[in-house]
Image 1: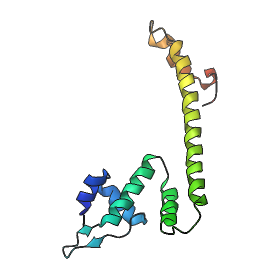
Image 2: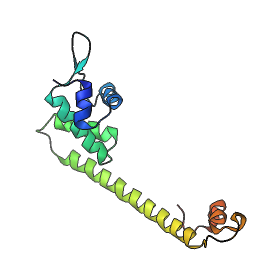
Image 3: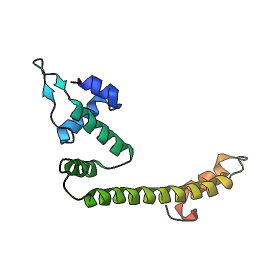
Image 4: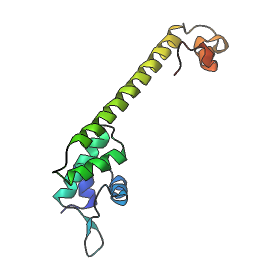
Length: 138
């Protein structure tokens, strides 16, 4: 059995986050000692590790909840898990595309600045002050 602190150290998940996961139902309620301290078993450790890994991959809480629900029914089709993973991949690709557009625009703005002269005449300041000067929407 693990205390919440031990669970935190083993998984790298902060104690308040573990409590939050328990409140939201991602983590099952912990057993309690006679002193009302939480105690987690190996299943709790594995569940928290699963949640941490999924969060590290950017899955939202509701998707993780759905994945955990699937995990508790191993006889169900994995299509739902694949769909959730595909949705996350699509989201990541969209964010990358937006970041690449931002990178391109910032690169263009920085390239227009020679670093000389007064701030009032600075290309960066002018570009930031007027969105219409941007080469693309972002």
